[in-house]
Image 1 (cartoon, rainbow, N blue to C red):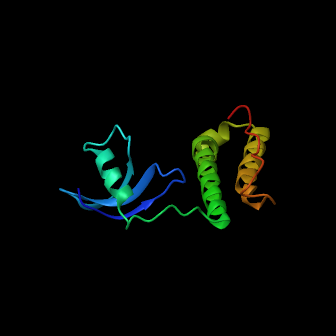
Image 2: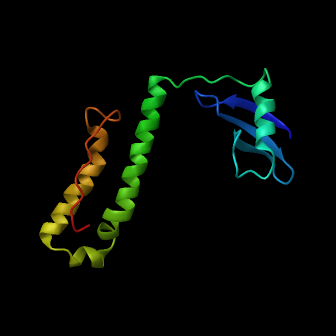
Length: 137
């Protein structure tokens, strides 16, 4: 199988990211693991060829800045999921919002703002305190 731009992406060397030349789609990204049971071809053979290839780029650990960016992105994604699945189902729906008591509206608004403000916490993204979701949400 044709591949290009192979690089080891895990410290233990168990995953190699590359592009493979797919018969139907042309060059596509592929994450190759030697023991991947889900591929429709011999991924172990491809992995071994790439691992032995001197052109395969060795693993380079992420910088602290890259780690922090990844953490921040993951937290923002989790926050977005919470907003979409729990908060905005009320806040974006006038009928559901109207069914809430004024105390619940205040509680939900406060919770929503606290979620939006997590990126302002002094220790973000290394550590943070998630706001407590109202019991009734």
